[in-house]
Length: 403
Image (cartoon, rainbow, N blue to C red; front, top):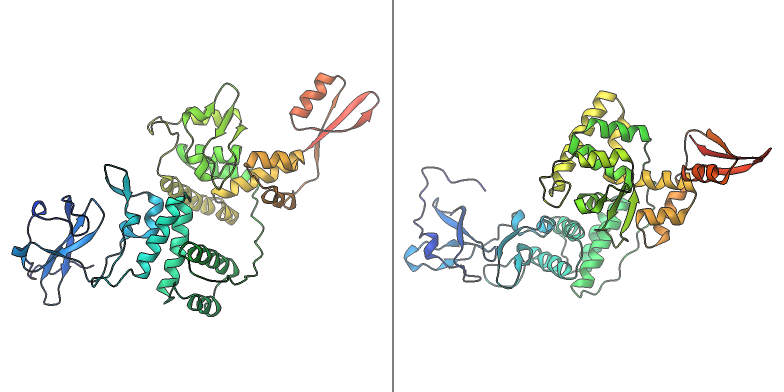
């Protein structure tokens, strides 16, 4: 919203101390910019820190009766997609109230707008324990359809949009999934349409390319990437790691905050990873990494763009945080041929989610390292190092592993 001209008249407004929120009656009122009026004047907008409600003062300041805005300013503070950032404006006596619970209403009190319905939907998902990122993603997809003129309360309107809009199969599948959840939560009768969608095979980079990215980032981002590479954890799981999750005595990291309903697990990592973690500054309290995951993502994107230009390797642009997880799963299966072990490393509860990695083994070389053992102790050390038994030759046991 543009600020009014300096020559415009600004209506006289009372002080925040003399106001009460018309929604909750709270007294914690802050100024929230000016609202221009049709006659060229402006009135002060106010924000209640108790419930997140925005309102403007009537022209008659002496009446001291706040009036509601004719249209609601849906800034990020009150949008459903802001839920993932856990914005909170006050602590009530009973519990903290997130602004996602604030309803968007019309001035005449005719009910909730579609934006308000999305807010209600998101708040219901929040109360049911869904992850913030899941809620914000679904809310974003619904808001996208609303901006295209879709009426969410009318399934026929949604089906018309899906049939006429130019959408990829992947995006259409996401929209159908989001609207299926919306109709189920809001008690709207709808038979979901079928979308033919075949997921693409994930990109598996070379280990040297991952190492180039890690070496080209700053200390904090490089440590984060090294943890992803060694553990195969999701970025959100690595981001929530605490100092108490790292066991230096046996070089292990415990994933105690799994995402997407996965199992918690403990992964053995390299000495290099432990050394990089120990070099991290202890300025985030109990957590190892910056509580703002977005800051790590921004630093990673900047470094990746620079390395693509410096090394002239466009393949690096396809590497994201989740690519490290795909690489870990693929290489572990190539090394062990044990799908149950890979399932345990990734924390999957359903083996169907792990079986995809059995289709990704396509390494550039069939060359092997070979070794021999005469005693049980020597054979045991080779097996622990990743060697596989081949055969017995003249009293020796022959082992090999891929280069």
